[in-house]
Image (tube, rainbow, N blue to C red; front, top):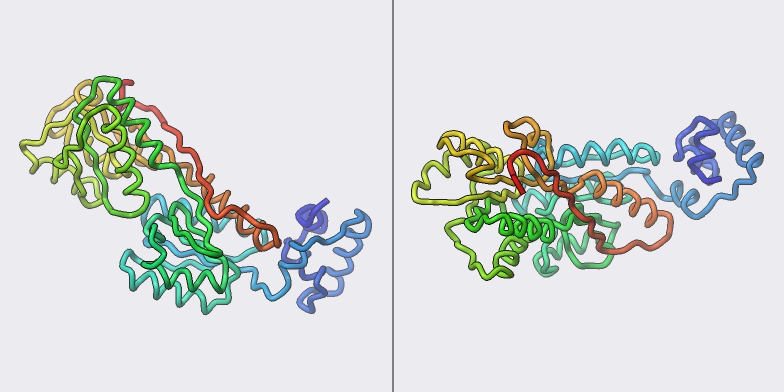
Length: 331
């Protein structure tokens, strides 16, 4: 029997149960009596988590992402908001943009809301060098900071990461084993995740004795037609396969290949990343790396609840990606 069972039996939120445990005046006497009766009937002894929920807590988690219009981030924020509600927590969302000053301003604003923990969605938050992120380390001195697919080493900073590097290494090898030697790599940023993907691509080529051709590493805008138009301008560029850091970039490559009359996957294979709705909206349907955003978010929520309950959690947790094979590859 735990706090969630008591809340279910009493038909109240776990936040209400925690308030009863802590004798909060915010709960009516009728509700308090009902919850206490159910606790007594089931020999329920409140643990540190149940008590901690009501002590100096606003039962609120702050969420920051660069742009909620982004498909990946929208999916993550939606999952976080719905599932944190199941624990009796409200959410406050701020969109920071990608500029450093915007990130700091968003954090300053959200900290005024007396949140219990801060979740930052996306690999644009956190880098390898703590010196560049002293402001984020100072935030972590006040409350726990959780990075989804970002990484920063520091006290009270916790990262849940997709293993992007290994996933891209593996698909690059599969292309090489299938006889594809001229692999184009498309990325839209220099974020932590993007650089890990590039590293996986480069390491796989190196393992097979193939040097990276910098002409085949491109950074277009993360928009379908921007990719198509850039590739149309690269008249002398030849490639037999594409690995893209996002599904948007991969669909842009498909648009280019269609414009050129090249057959997919017979002449050119294409692989995206994120397993978004775009991967099944295009024709042919896109092979893509599923970085399992739901698992990243669930692991983050579990870690928040564990930490706020007084237990320790790992500062870095890595989630294995899955390759979803569809019609743009033939391996």
